[in-house]
Image (cartoon, rainbow, N blue to C red; front, side, top):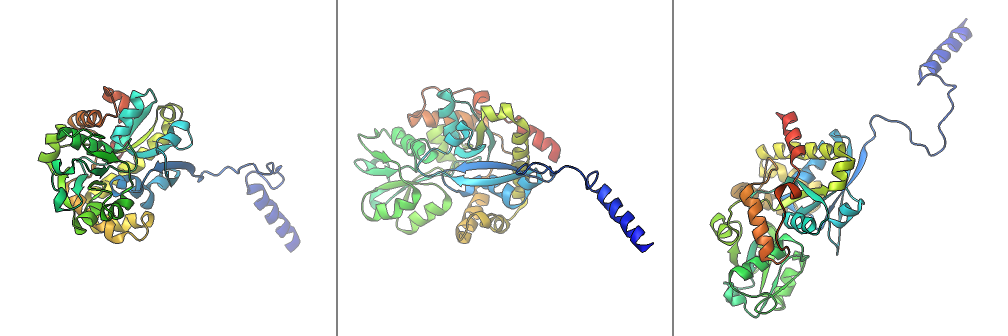
Length: 346
């Protein structure tokens, strides 16, 4: 009797496992169906920076995973972070608004999905008291970030043009990563540099630098680009991905909207703590940037662009010589995914 009961129990269990133990196994190497499988997503960046915090927080707070996404951030060295997105090797990139203007004017389709800042975050800093004005930079060299297709470079060029200084003739504006600023200033190679975040500005000022143009000051930046608002830092994707996989795009935007919602009420200490897994060893820097961000109101907690900010982006990018005319907002932005994300979060 005991053997009979054991046999029946084994048979019952066997039949209950996905329809029976006697099913033909899948071919070797074929993926098993699993409702919990996450979709791999690549987000490119040229540098890891605090002002894209909503994208990073969406990962560290688990919001990407909640949306069924397995996200990895890939730092692109010596190349434009938008290139892998346009080629389909990556799904999203963290870039400045200038890239959307340049790429779309060239006829390549990209859309800004989320704007993560709402005010200008850069400062042009002179190497010393001897370089405390734009005019004092005449004949010198200014560093404007890692690439000519970037926000820091555009800002440097715009400052020169606004002051009547002709780039390459009166002032040499070059590309250089912020990590190289201090050594280049010490050696006399640089007379000025664009700080790419509050922490980099602090380091330059601690070393004896002087603020020449404070882009974080509403009145100053409005005098240069005509607007106090400026949605510089963005998350972008290709038109091709929007067309081929809008569901994936929606999931990514949902996660970042959740992160912005969380970030709005979080303290600088909480934000720094949650970002730390993606910024190893940068606890002091993260806290400084988070405090600065809260004090100056740099972060964008809704993700949308403003009309004046976009007009300013076109003005600035023209001044930098990167575009001729600019494109209409609906060519550069697709905020319909944000609309849906916020509807679900209400």
